[in-house]
Length: 350
Image 1 (cartoon, helix red, strand yellow):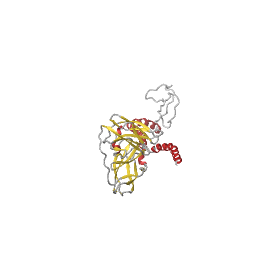
Image 2 (spheres, one colour; image 1 turned 30 degrees about the horizontal axis):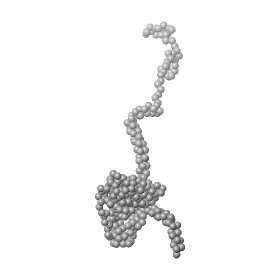
Image 3 (tube, helix red, strand yellow; image 1 turned 180 degrees about the vertical axis):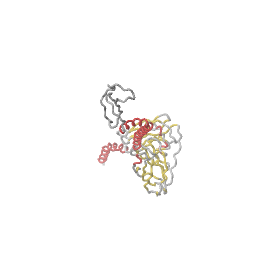
Image 4 (tube, one colour; image 1 turned 180 degrees about the horizontal axis):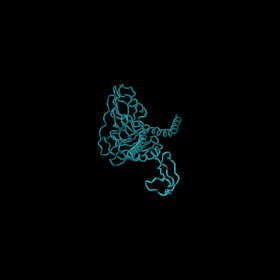
C-alpha cells in the first residue's frame, strides 16, 4: 500500500510542472487588464497593463461609467470619457502597458477602465476603477421579461457600387443571430445601431426588427446600416438592445476616388474652356482690324491694279493723226521751209 502511495506521489511531482505550464496558457486565452491603482482623481493618471491579447493589435483605453466587469459598459461608449482616451499597440507577445489620464465619465460610477480592440476581431476586457469625487449610482435594472443575447459574431454584408465610388452614402446590412434567454416572448424588438468614426462616440439610430422570438429560441436578424455621403476611413458599427451594447463590428470604408478624379478633370477642363472663351471674345472685339489687313491682299489676288502706262514720244517721231495713217510714224522733217513765204492771198502758181 505504501508503495502505491509513493508511486502516486512521484507521478504528481512529475506532472506538477506540466500543470503549472498549462495554467498560464489557458489563462492567456482570455484578455486580461490590470491597473497600477484602483482609485485616482481627475488630473491624475493610472498605468494600464494587459496580456493575452492578439499580437500587434491596436487597442483603445477608456474610463467608462455605469459599467462593471460582469455586465460590461451598459451605455456603450457614450458612457466613456472619449476625449481623454488613449491608444496602444500590443507587442509580439500580446502584452501592453500605457498610462491613461483619469477623467470623469459623462455618467455616474460604478466605473471601469475599458480596453477594446479598435480593428480586426472584437475583444474587450474591463477592470474596476473608482474616480475619486465622481458620483456613484446603482446600475439600471435589467428587464425581467424576454432577454436577447448575441449567439454568433456579427458581420456586415454587401459591397460598394459605382455610385459609392463617386461619393454616394456607403450601405451595408448588419447580420447576426440572437437568442431569447428570458422567460417571455419578445415581439418586434427595437434595436439601436450606432456608427462611430475612429475614437468618436457613435451616433445611434433606431432599427425595429419585425418578428417574434419565443423563450429559448433564436432568430437571424438583418438591420440596414448607412453612413453619410463621402464617408471613408475606419468606422465601428455598434448594436444596442435594452440600453446595453451587444456587439461591435469594425468597418473599413474606402475613399471615393471618383470624386477626386472629378475634381482633377474639372481643374483641367474649366481653365481650357475659359481660355477658349477668352480668345473668342478677343476675336470679336477686333474684327475690323483683321478685315483691313486682309482686304488689300484679297484685292491684289483677285483684281490686280493695272500697271500705270507712260508714253514717251521722241521728238522726231510723231503719231500721224490723219485718216488711214493711225499708228504710223512720220519721218523726221525740218520745220523751216526752204522757199520764201508768199504773202497772204497770193496764188502759189503765180
